[in-house]
View: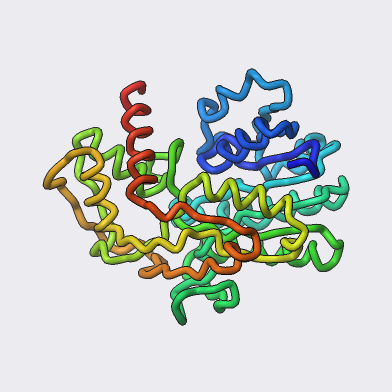
Amino acid sequence: MSKYKKAIVTGGAGFIGSHLVEELVKSGVYTISVDNYFAGKEENLAHLKQYDNFQEEKCDVLDFERLDELFEGVDVVFHQAASKKTICLNNPRLDLDINAKGTFNLLELAVKHGVKKFVHASTGSVYGEAQYFPQDENHPLVPTSYYGCSKLAGEKYVKIFNHLYGLNTTVLRYFHIYGPRQESSDVGGVVSIFCRNLLNGQPMTIFGDGTQQRSFTNVKDVVKANIAAAELDNTNGEVYNCASGIKVTVKELADMVAKSLNISDPVINYGDWTPGDIKVFDIDNSKIREGMNIDFLTDFEKGLQETVDWAVAYFENK
């Protein structure tokens, strides 16, 4: 990160954000973590408080005035904060505010303060149900959930600021990120939720029949993609699928998590399909692999075992 001296990471105390903050701090960039701690955790950043180039701020992306103060001298922004898909079902208006208005706030401040680079975390949910496979970045954008709509609105604002003001932007569309520190509550990721259930002696719950296919991507690869997006000159104005290309069904995942924990015949409960749930993800990641020279971790069992081992240690210490 030789190009930049001062960074803001929104959602910095969250799962992905904390890994990104850690990488930036250790690379020598003065890094401000901005998080409202609705989902983020102080413990995710506790090990970084020893560094002089780390700053932790409790702040919401909707608090324009406070953000304005924090943007002084910032030259790169990694916008990771988002209203999660599980939250949008309960409060779609808040989902819209965070994912659209919050993004607009950050973009406006980026222009005001002369930020050199804005990396925006989006989602594969902007595509909606696949009209062809594999889905590349040119696939029609027809989201089927409030979350997909609000994240698409955020993407559109990024594009507008790139076009109108020449703000150097890159959009990364995430797909089913997993790894250490993933939130295990009901608003968290499915890998951590399954780990929590099994470690607590509870059944795993699958919404639908378990045949829905996901493209799981390791958090370390997501961090690499964010850094590359900021460092490389050819990423300006571009959108990338940030996905490993791995294809695993939710039922297969449940069985693999149980196997990693040496649990035979785990109990699985099946619930109703989640409204707007996408059945199949088959992602074309050739653009990001070739354009950024990103090599994704394709040994899913290895990455999953590392995640499960972290979860075991985490819950033992709770």
